[in-house]
Image 1: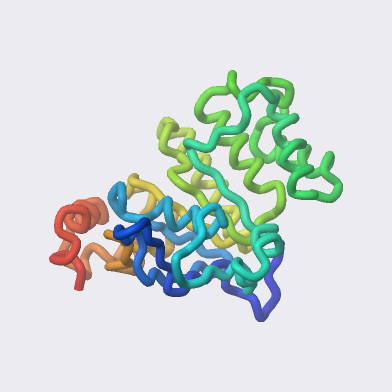
Image 2 (image 1 turned 45 degrees about the horizontal axis):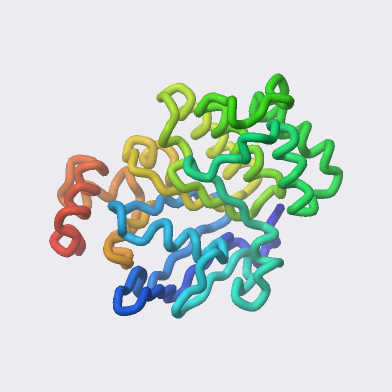
Length: 252
């Protein structure tokens, strides 16, 4: 899906807040993801990353703030906003009792994809899944399952793609191939991508910008290649560890 000249922001999150009783999971979280940009959402477990993604997907309702996808307010027009959005995660596997082809057709029908047969064939070829079209997803290797999940996530040609640890279960070679495909997607199709990962080498290789999240707040933001040096750390991994252990001391 191509954004118009006046709609270059794939995602805009404004003062997003989530409360669970007395606990504040997110507090006035604001950031953007531009068309064609890959942004890393970083932070230790419990920082609020998955909560953020679930609110962008409309799975969780915010306690405050707003989410705009392609210039559309999610709260006011959920169906239209999410029509240009998709998601993949290592823990969100496709139904194992359906074949690769059946899964793509099933989700394609849910998304109302036009010329679905042709679109499924395109994705089977692009992700090297043609020989596995009649194989049940539960029998696939981790790398094959990841490729199938990404094919599903691209069925609707999203303008916003959310990736939650997409390469966590892959060997280095398979993970590199997936990263290359995602970078191509951003450059070729102008897709805005929000990517969570605990692999800092991967984040440096893929993301043009990162947000460090701690206790529901963005504490640092910048280029992953230069941000560590700006805060006295020798590497992104070292900065991540500092942020996780002493977030207030590491922040400016």
